[in-house]
Image (cartoon, rainbow, N blue to C red; front, top):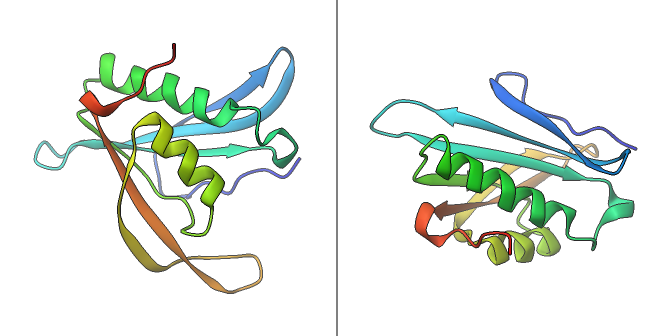
Length: 130
């Protein structure tokens, strides 16, 4: 399984997503702790063979609930590639809303720049795991 490429300059809190004893992905969160800009950001990677099984959405719901309930974040951000429609639909189901396009935000392995979509979720908008 390919491993995700986390930013090297981010002090994050990574977790492995497992189903039984099978690793299906990774998720991490990081914080901006300046009181005037305080928020959390999350990144997630799901093994492409596991897409469609809702592991990403469920993991994001659990992590966001933890960030809101335990760490008292009022705002959480995520930034998928703007063309990743499956991920964007999943994030919207959790309560994230598109904020804007970040042009030429990340460079792919092919060297081509890709746009990112900045999305955020405010604590009251979180759709919790049923």
